[in-house]
Amino acid sequence: MKLRKALLIFVALAALPIAVAIFFWLIMPDPVRLLVATIKKHSPYSEHDPIALQIEEAGLGNRAAPRVLELLDDDDPQVRKRAAEALAQIRADGSVIIPKLLEKRFDPDPSVRDAVLIALARARPTNDAVIDLFFELTKANDPHVRVDAARSATCFPRRKELCLQYYPY
Image 1 (spheres, rainbow, N blue to C red):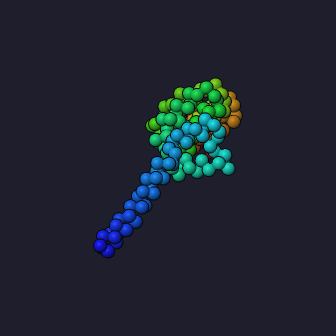
Image 2: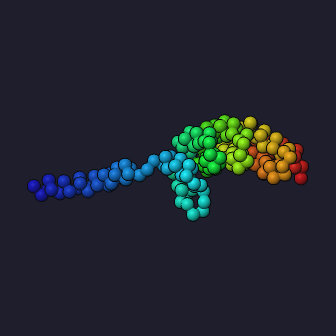
Image 3: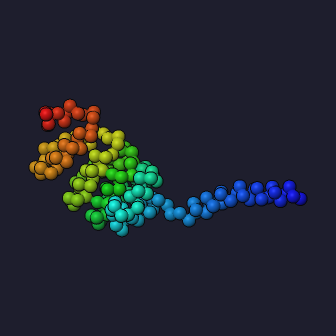
């Protein structure tokens, strides 16, 4: 009888951490859904908001990318801008996010276009279309755009010889 009680206590104590883990798994919100809601409501990248840390630590990447890419088509330019900012942070594969970002580089809102370009500069691995875009932007009329494009172009080591063409020093 004592052996049965001891065995029952051992099994109960062994099952307790599993039960607690399942409980927390059930009550914790889906991080992708939380990210999408945060993008729709306010910027997740202020210094005082812990969601910025959660995005990087959760490793949302490719799992969140499709939902965030949908937000690039939102009617609100602030939502589109925050979606592009999120894509720059979540470290999704470039092959997943680059095609949609290239489409959105012509957004009518300048702040969205800037956020899209930043996301394109951070997307890895990159492709030739992105590299060519940044080299084209080094010829833009706006000096701010030219400098930002040149800085981004230095991130592409495969095409470093082209960067020397624009900046021979």
